[in-house]
Every structure is written in C-alpha cells, then in structure tokens.
Amino acid sequence: MKRITFPLMGILLAMGLSLAAPGKEAARTFVGSIGDSMCGAKHTMGGSDKDCTLECVKKEGSKYILIDPNGKLYQLSDQKTPEQFAGAKVKVTGTLSGDTISVTSISAAN
Image 1 (cartoon, helix red, strand yellow):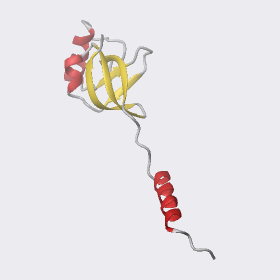
Image 2 (cartoon, one colour; image 1 turned 135 degrees about the vertical axis):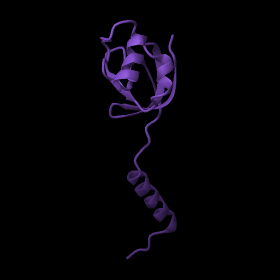
Image 3 (cartoon, one colour; image 1 turned 90 degrees about the horizontal axis):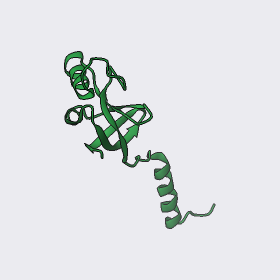
Image 4 (cartoon, rainbow, N blue to C red; image 1 turned 90 degrees about the vertical axis):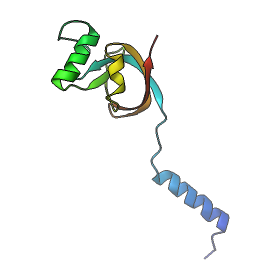
C-alpha cells in the first residue's frame, strides 16, 4: 500500500471540512415597507399605515415585518429598530433564512 503524502492529506482534509461546514449566506439588502404581522400589506385599523402598524404592534401584540414591492412578507429578527420606520419605505440589510431576515441594519429608502 502506498503511503499518502503530507500535502495530499492536507488537501483531502481541507476538502472534507469545506463540505462538512455549512456555508454562511452573504448579507443582502431588501427593499420594502415596514408593516405588522396582523395586517400585512392591508392596514385595516384605520388611519395612516404608520398609525395602524404602531397600534397593531403595541396593542395587539403583532410583530414588525418587511413587505416587499411584490407583497411578499418577511419576518424581522430585530423588533426594536423597525418602530421608527413604521409604515415607511426602508432598506433592510441582513441574511435570509426561510422567511426571516436576520437584520444587520435598517435605513430609510428613497
């Protein structure tokens, strides 16, 4: 039986580790508006989108979400920062896992 050389063992080990370790998804930017999980894209509590969103989160226990321009809803890991952007168009930077964005930052969109 031939002996495996040290450099070849290193390459095989590195390949095995890269296959075993799950790849970390790169952060990306999502654009949409901040709403709430109860009303989604249709604010039913009356008043402005901002007022409805704030009301639903504070009094109904709803969660802040991102509504993209196509109407897709994303859960947000950060439930404090979105309050200042309730009902407004934003850019959310983070990583997506399922339908939840692990938020890195939120800023106003143009």
